Length: 373
Ligand code: PEP
Ligand code: MG
Image 1 (cartoon, rainbow, N blue to C red):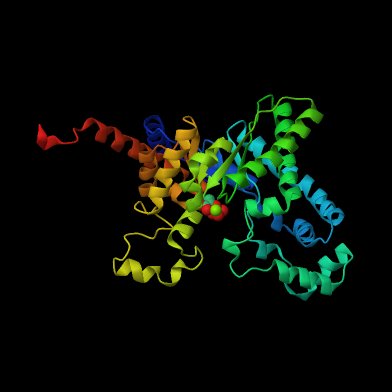
Image 2 (image 1 turned 90 degrees about the vertical axis):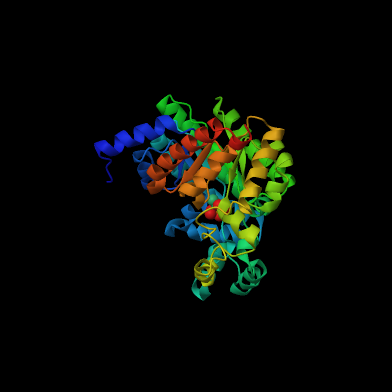
């Protein structure tokens, strides 16, 4: 268990009184959530649900869900996943005790959920009561050359609407349950990944709202929740004014936004980035510290366009950059409401946000053209 010493707490207290931005953490397990709270996170800014599906007692159902040849088989697999997800979200809501929790609907690299090897394929075929040949053909049809630029995020939620419906149901049911037992209202924030077009968000939102309305009506309660989107594709930043019409909040996904703005795979940058850094072709690794000239402009544009449509739109960032001090200074300058980072970086983010707020105040006090007086 990490502990914070007295001096450290004093310093953090000073930072907390100084900073403007909220600090949240990226967390999906109860352990991560506990660590996040311990380090002073003011909520969860990103719960990546894809990590929840790899547990040995779940992955089989995920594979059946994706590979199912008919609706009945798909529904059976999805129904089997619902109690797991309800437990996942219940645990997080309990730990976060009324602090905001942003749950992102599934954004898997689909290839990781497909059966690998003959044994897994045979297992899924048996569970679905189909031939191995039929399953092999279906797997081939689902395989992609560039999964990170393919059938993921809301694209998958649109082609498999039952999947997002199950997650939305689990979130709303868990929020109702924890609100009831704690007497404290849980207000879940449901986040849609990899949106590039407002049509994707509108349709996904409508599906989520329909499920939520049904669950709330069946429970006979009132529950507040919000639906927002990741802004992690250049097209989303460029059309943020339209996307904001259907979003209650934006969270900038600067990992994917960096990947897609540079046209540079997140997973392969290591092959030549050391060379670029050594020869000063780039000042810092853009996957660690935000590229202000390129990616940063898209973030600034997303902020401006989003707030033009909705002046009070809540804005955050949940890419790795949310825990990087230079990037945090940039996010302060464009006016984000919060940053979300790995739980262990929360103290650094609290300090960096305070320093950024001070620097900004200082800048605003200083005359812009000192020599023109
Ligand atoms: C991002 O793209 O910045 C993000 C937070 O999502 P992920 O890293 O899960 O793609
Ligand atoms: Mg992403």
